[in-house]
Length: 135
Image (cartoon, rainbow, N blue to C red; front, side):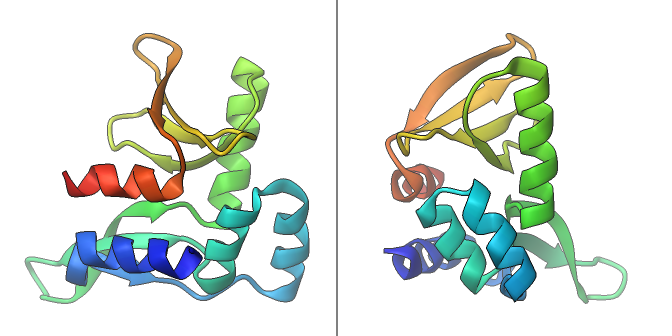
């Protein structure tokens, strides 16, 4: 299932998808206590997934965004979300416009938008979340 999600991300983003190093042992032990299993399994393979593009000046790839946050980013963004709004869930990605996606304890994905200070249902699970990006 997790490899299917990573393959789906690679299909959607193509050469713009950059996997990162997996969690190290210390990070894994920390992540195991705070992340849902499916997200933990993704980070075991790649501690975050970057979106890249060629630098117009050099031609080298440069990171322009995160497709999935790293453990450090997840922890920081989730702590902010929990502290600010008090809702349950794990923030794992941004929407590129200041909002963020939350993986709820039941596995469903919600989008939190700052302009209306509310969450809206987005997808049933991580696979469905990424399939929406394809459309």
